[in-house]
Image (cartoon, rainbow over all chains, first blue to last red; front, side, top):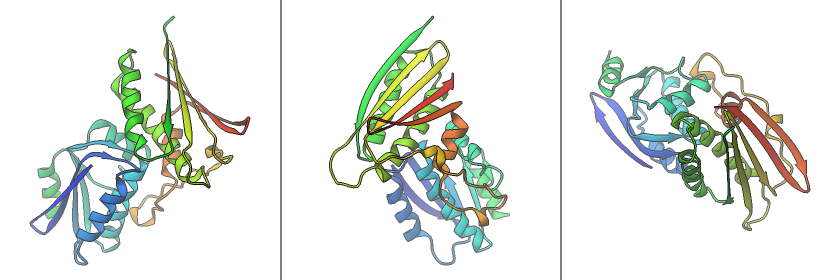
Length: 112
Length: 138
């Protein structure tokens, strides 16, 4: 698992690569907590290179999304592989977080 | 009738989750199962095995969990046996999924995912072991 971040137009973008499971999610969680500033209000997860997601990883993404939502901010997910999408879907979260096909679409959505 | 069997063992260490995926891919290669079915099974076994190693053992010793897969035509059966404390994951209540992210309680999602992706789950405590039998039409 690798997690990178960058900021574009005041949107914090995390790109997660590889396997996000119970073994790797503590590192991702730590990185996200350290990187998210107190005033971060727009957050995007670029999941185009995420190969595997289990509930341990799902929790990490959801708690970051929840934190932003509590600040009345905006969150989006982009470029999910079909089986990554499936995990969000069976858990009931596709109705709660905007999911876009591409990073560009998600950035447009968050900028509006 | 097509039948295919595959067995493996994992140690109680989270690094074994990657080994689990490798075993399932190897199992999948010997069958006509789709990648999507293999991924579904992988995630379910991941969730259950993560529970076992997180809550099953009170000591710091090495413990082995056994997996046995049996594909019979389009019915896949998986048996998971561990020597941890008696634990029936089916007794865990499904989390209520609220309509808004703000109200989400982050936890209990693993077994919820297993229930959604598998067609049948059966638990029994036998000879000091937890035995879970999962079935999925593939």
